[in-house]
Image: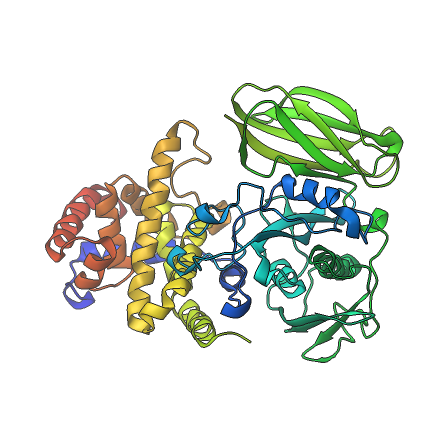
Length: 354
Length: 169
């Protein structure tokens, strides 16, 4: 090939022009962090077998099975998802981008081929409510053998969530070394240095961890009502985002920390058939939830529905007869203040009707 | 605690990132004209490399793998753009902001714009050679074509650019 010594003036000019143009490109500062986030590796023995998101069917099961409901918001019970579409036979080659919790880098051929029973493990993320971040939940389907508090916390820390509107307050660089449950506390041992963009969101970030650990305990048949003690490298965590966590932390009041309107079904980017069931949970004034259906960003239909109970978290459900196509459904609180108070909370999903 | 291959891969990625990331993003930006998309393509390449570390385990092979992945990733983006041409999300071409244009940059922009008008393979060959500084064999491997084909794409590309080059001088 040519070397700079024997390049023609023309080649030299092209070289200079390309460098001049290229040197203006300044990549963002967080490239490595973004890559890390996607390559976080879990040791084989506790690598969750990712089967994709358990849909709302898992939640429905959780509610029905709820003999062990220790939490009043539907985390209780065992959301066994074996009756959903995530049957073992079709999943080892699942490359769908829905929930890349395990390292996306893991080639499908490395996926264990003999899963036993899949189970839906709740994991908490945050969504912008319009008045600060609020907790939202996703279910990640893992093999029952790795359905542990540790797996749930690992998933939360390594993300990303399936719903692009959701995120996490935990910056990359923290991992979970162990999680165990004793008679009176759930112990979660982390390593790394927890970091947060906005220190005013520290409490909600800590609740993200507490909700995830307690929900995972409940989902795996353990006591989810226990407080959570956080340690870092085995030592009491005296400074997590500036908060002293040497004492165990309880779940905060859901009305204070959870997103007030959440959609469980359809799941993000789901393909469904008409009639489409829209299901979720809301803590709403007068039990009223507004819905709006959009195509290409334009509203095409709207209405309201009721949850089963006012002013606390309660389920809602509606059915829509829809022609094939792509839609977005937005569920939101009614705003009793007429715009005077905080912005109404909403949740949305994009889906396709076949 | 991580298994050994995992943490080895993590360390390798950190080193390779330091050595190649910025240059690959710039390379991909020259291919695509869009910095944000270029960054995504390069990050995808690093993630894919991490997954293949077990088989590569060698910095030189890894650098080659990254190059090939980036070229391939950019081709995929171009194909998708072809499909989505009816709904362009952003104006095509390289569009630096006003404050980025310093003396001499306008001339560079003219060349880059002319480059964008070339067939994809010719653009790849020119950018890999005159920006990347890679050898013919490295370029051939990244583009998955023969050494001879690299030569002919590059010389036809240079001929295609000649008009813009003349304007500049």
